[in-house]
Length: 315
Image (tube, rainbow, N blue to C red):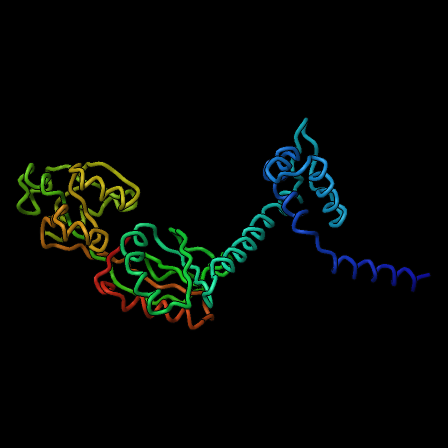
């Protein structure tokens, strides 16, 4: 009897190890947990409510625990259901990304998934990408915005362009360039406020980046005006908005030169002084620690030697 009991237990464990719910079952559960409604999940997935309910019940039977509890006309995930839903949402997104990468690769041998800073991508990187694709036609590219360090492996990124300090754990960080910022304004703004020297900027409207409220103070200090205090002005959370504000003559701006290459060339923005603010932050090319591939190496080498890379400054 004891032998039969052990045999039944081993068979049960073997079945459980082999059991894996279908993708449809997982999608129904994830949608129901996220929307807290079988009806809303059915509507989103173009199924009947009974089909979603049946698939959720199949998952509960396979796992061996309740995943939902009734709350009036709605359903709410149990603690086990909520934990599973969080993990599953990430897993389903990874599957989606894998399939999209396969579809996007087309005739390419591989697709590099690259995390970028938004203004850096639109103003510096993307205009130079035709050169990379010409040199490496077998490598496809997929760009996505990330502002802070994250789990490269977990989110399946091959490369990240990071601005800040060399403090990203479990990665290999290769220094790309240091940061240099310059003071600029529109020609109309400079003429209206008769700006001729750094001291002229103390009493004019200034444009500030939210994450760098003291940048203008540092610039004045570098210009030989160390006593200048924090000055009022309009605040923005993206360099792209500050560029638009400067072009609209709302104020003088402190910007990385690489972001405004076109505007400096066509004269729509003018440099107000030869002083450049060098900060402690830098650009880095970041890859997961202990991994490498020819496409990743090709992109890393290309961006370090790309036209204008030596004059990059922060995002």
